[in-house]
Length: 258
Image 1 (cartoon, one colour):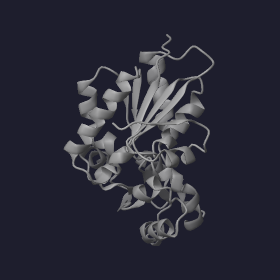
Image 2: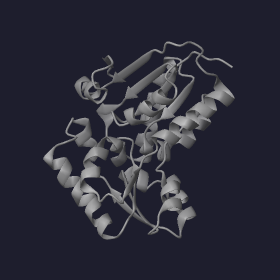
Image 3: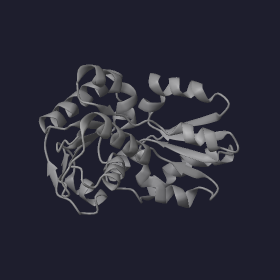
Image 4: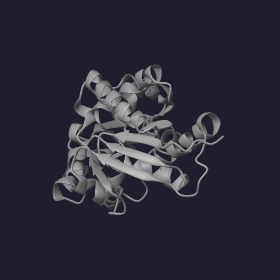
């Protein structure tokens, strides 16, 4: 089964590029369209109703570009809106959730940390998933200010380092051996986190699992691209420079005020 329409992805900004990279690495022949809603970042401080309205707007844009599948490359959007999106549209949706399961299964201390947005940690979907891991102590921390700094291109700033220390140092003191990154922006912080965290603490994000799930759904329900050359498009309603730098200036970025 073939389908040469693009894979669509959206996020509240540049963070979902971590998910796009995993998908592109696994399926380099697939056409992709990435939408960065940076003007409205972060989603994590908005109400469920606001998040759903933004997700509908983003979905409509990707559908206008003939997306054959839509990856909600944002934890907050997934946990607050994906159920409604799936009931509203025919196109398949792939969500992204904090990778608690592998951390809980492999933890030796049975104490894991999760760094995520307020919108994710307070969502009904996230809290339902926690019920499955009652034998594991899960230390939750809202990453206030992290998305804003990433969107402003301040990955290596002093303020970023100070914030990360304030969030993860207490987790280290409580003997975590896994840190789950519950926001698609946060994988860009892994180099910083590796310098801060002891070597025995494993960092987990969801990118590879999301890419594999996307491939499975394409094979089973949608169809794969049958040409060797892929077309990639990136749209943002924020600062093009930040997105270009995240992409290491390898791709053109189109500004669109949507």
